[in-house]
Length: 239
Ligand SMILES: Nc1ncnc2c1ncn2[C@@H]1O[C@H](COP(=O)(O)OP(=O)(O)OP(=O)(O)O)[C@@H](O)[C@H]1O
Ligand SMILES: [Mg+2]
Image (cartoon, rainbow, N blue to C red):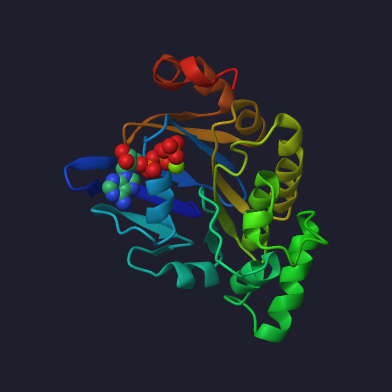
């Protein structure tokens, strides 16, 4: 049995079928990449897996149990954590407050603050603890999303475009953090448009187009798949 099993997930928004019977497995310890054009349904898929969006039908099994209907908070306590594509910030909260809130899902307050500070150090945001997220650069906002994930002691993280908008040089830090987390045994599912990055990090890829899975395989297999080239790579190979 795989660590995460997505089976026949369909999600409709009114008349729009954002996800249509999408199925795939994620093995413990792997890095799975998910790609697909804008509007393909990738963020909706993460919303479903992480408990934010109920599916119209289908099932998700995490660590041997169905998690449909389980709240995001409870899933985080079970080690399933997601990042947000649109970096969320709350007025008046500092970076340390934001990461402490994440750490509090798993730890009492006195430990959570220290743990959050360590997570910020680990992503290279030491010294920026007291800034508000709105004043951080895009790269630092993305690193803050990673710190939030780290602070929850995840076993599996869903990363939604943590490289988007960064220069290739700026991607080095998040790449190193993701590789290190994975080495420590964290299973990673990542949506990314930055092709050289996802091709390098992912051991396996799933391709979604108009809400449907159109291909899966190793990065090499995906590059050679004509359906994928037609649906996606025309625009993104040299991104
Ligand atoms: N809450 C919602 N209500 C109505 N439609 C929605 C909602 N969320 C997403 N959609 C629609 O579902 C489709 C899939 O959106 P989604 O954000 O999952 O795509 P995506 O693959 O993450 O795109 P991108 O690469 O631009 O981030 C889009 O057509 C989007 O407009
Ligand atoms: Mg998205």
